[in-house]
Image 1 (tube, each protein chain N blue to C red):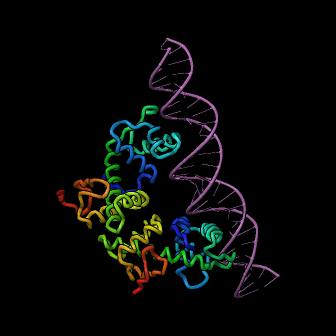
Image 2 (cartoon, rainbow over the protein chains, first blue to last red):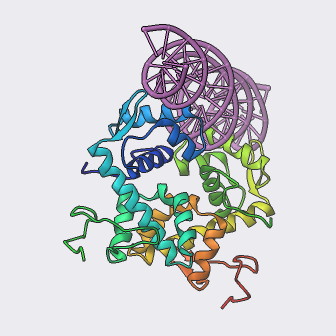
Image 3 (tube, chains in turn cyan, blue, brown, purple):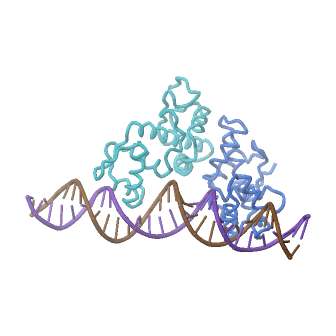
Length: 147
Length: 147
DNA sequence: TCCTGGTTTGGTGTCTGTCTAAATTTTCCC
DNA sequence: GGGAAAATTTAGACAGACACCAAACCAGGA
């Protein structure tokens, strides 16, 4: 997954993927539907499309699992969320607010922009809502920082 | 217009309004269409809706003018753009990049969030792409700064 | 007055996200 | 093993945003 842009999935689908990624094992439709307060059929439809794009494996009636491609993408989504939240917290928002507001705006941030902000923050290890995982190709200018 | 949320207009419509606001006099459909590279009929349709919402006055075949309500809203849009651009420039983006990227993400920022960032930046007078106009009710915690 | 270019209308299409109702599959209990 | 209940999917519909094209329409200049 070299060329992540950050716009591969629509914002709702990205949220679903992130949620699935953050669960431990196979995730059921109902669980997702409950979490996002939407009808199960809405989830099924989204899941089908996310699967078609290769980010998850959907076994009808049995739930979904994230593929390796999906894992990579979800990691980006989580990192983006945390970077955005961190930026907001640096602008006067309390940790929880920052996290909440980040959810509303993160989908607009491209990978490039995320990386730029990451770099300018000095590739921080922690955000206001969890750790930030960097990998070797996380940011263009990132060269083996890591602690 | 007390309760601006920042989501009153869809993002395209907000862009149109901002553009109209920034022109001197009456703006013609063709001009907008050319500026945004869309068909004139697309613009007419949007204009009708923006007018219905009270932000502009649309005289068919003769162009549009911003109403006072529209002016107030457009000022917010411009301020938001500049605050967002300024934040980005504080995170390593060059002025022009910051302005360009801001255009892509600004529509996600609520008025509240904009105001919070404005406050945390110290109600700056200048952004990377122009002056930032503050007014008495611009930010919740803004109390007569103004230079 | 008439032509022409600018503009609007009306009809379509796509994408995203949502729902309901009906059909289907799985699960689990007797 | 049979069936009912629960979970899930399918099918069809709708709404909002945005875009286009073709056709009708207006306004102003020659």
